[in-house]
Image (cartoon, rainbow over all chains, first blue to last red; front, side, top):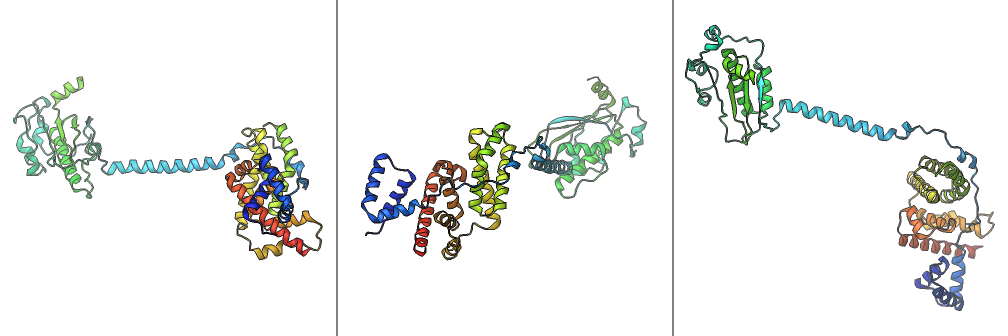
Length: 262
Length: 162
């Protein structure tokens, strides 16, 4: 008797599994019948097949027929609902954090738009009594008053007065001294601070921003205080630079009347 | 699938499913649990399950329940030949070939036992077994072949003893 090789084992397996065609099956049967060893292998392998008649009855079949009349969908979907709620809370915290950050930290967004800011209702500084005494239509601002303001000497050179002293219309333009550096300042933040917190100092973490704030606070504050203008119009422009070009136009009462009409 | 079809499924497949679970786990309580869970899931998703595929659905769910059970009980660890032989040795109450084969099933690795049970008892094709166990047809065939060889060798050795 020769030992059975793997190929013969596979052939017998395929024969029993029904994997052979009719022709192959006939050949295989003939081969098995011709060799006692293969025949023995065949018979032994055949015994490994489980009999379908080996029935086992499920004892609690009646309980399976019981169907709950209503399915509580809340409990069915509780996990997805909980997961969605957690995600919403996380997203909400993220949005809140982001928005709170944008109020104090530079976002890098510069938007070109015009914002009209009403001056603070309470003006504590009355540094120029003569201005207060002047009627709005004949507003006179001397160049000397601005030069003596807290703006540094370097900055004052960037704030040219286009009108001569004694004029009743004042147009003032402030340009950033660091126009060559990339922009990083949120103008909305600056405007907000000028309008509502004129005395607040800027965060010390960003020196350039602080410098700009300081300049704008002092400028805006001085202008508001000195000129007693009903409104200040601040135009910001898009800029590729770190500090935006900031044009500050001060409307005298005459301009304000025109502005209101528009 | 409607309610009537569900009841027909219970009548037609609960015994086979129970046998499948029982032969795989050798634990009556756990097998009952698995059958109940499978039918619960079937009813839960009865609106999405086609009645013609309900048997496949039940056996797939049952198989995955058993896979979880094996993972929990660390039964996936291979059994050494020696301990397996001792475990599967015929008892004094030996009654015949059927018991011998059933005992021999216990020495098989879980996946081999599962494919053999699905093949022999339920008459599933290699493809259908593959869809239940997430194997391809070749893998199923190989597992069945290896299982048969193991069973054959075991029966051969037992016949000598008996």
